[in-house]
Length: 386
Image 1 (cartoon, rainbow, N blue to C red):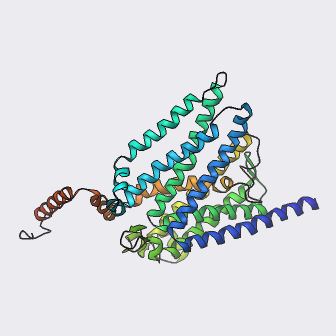
Image 2 (cartoon, one colour; image 1 turned 90 degrees about the vertical axis):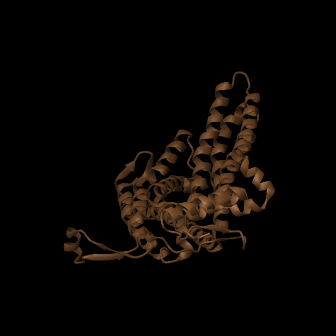
Image 3 (cartoon, one colour; image 1 turned 90 degrees about the horizontal axis):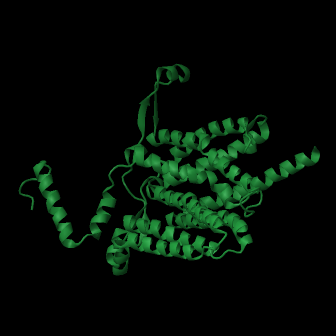
């Protein structure tokens, strides 16, 4: 019993020290700005892809079949080229306008992406080996499902970042907080098993993590909503060649007074409360991150059990591989992206302007004239203007 207790505490200390180191590194990346965060997301994406592909490669390599690993990395490059080319066209219109080679790549981006992918598809067909067709198609599907899980969702992380760093930081922090809170509550109070896929998970940890994460997300939202650096959309300034986050904060980052329901008034003795609307959104994010987010971890646990492995890798002592730490993050990023598109995002003048700058001068002039006439008809511009 003593040995078991000692081993449990030792593992807890290792996880705690490395967790603090990772959190400190996370704060340093935030300080270094959006470019560093994008680089980190890309690095994590590549490492997660490698860990999942390596599991398949151990099976595939035993048959000495050609090209699987090479084609897997080739398809990774193809998918990243497609997604980040789309991002270049969407967020860096002014830069594209100045560079003739970039204009060509953006104009024919989807055709080039398809052609590059098609080359990989043809290479896969040429690599087929008699008597192993089923296994090869199985591994072809393995690669594409891995791309869907890792690359697509890491791209959504970056999309969230461009909406404002707060949409990146709060969801990421919520998952980290829930993981820590659930571990601590489970460590000290856990008695009731939660799910067979993860025998160490307990109801006490799950419930404690939920309430702890709600409080944490609400407070963190309040702290970050006060700073333009976190709430303004991240935009590329072509004059300074830097990313900027300066704007007039939208309504969800401006203090509002809300009247509490009568039942809550009778309990708290407060009639109104003044908060940022974003704090209400943080409750929705925290709820998802606490109740549904862990299912990303359960999914990963089922995957590992299917292949009889403890962790995806041994990159981080006490934590396993990078994918072991980011299984819930990808699910959270997808929810955040859908949430922004459904409940937050409205017309974005800066993106419209970026798209207009890519057009030919005569096309820009045509749009200008059409807008001028429409504004005159609505009485916004005087008839004599221009």
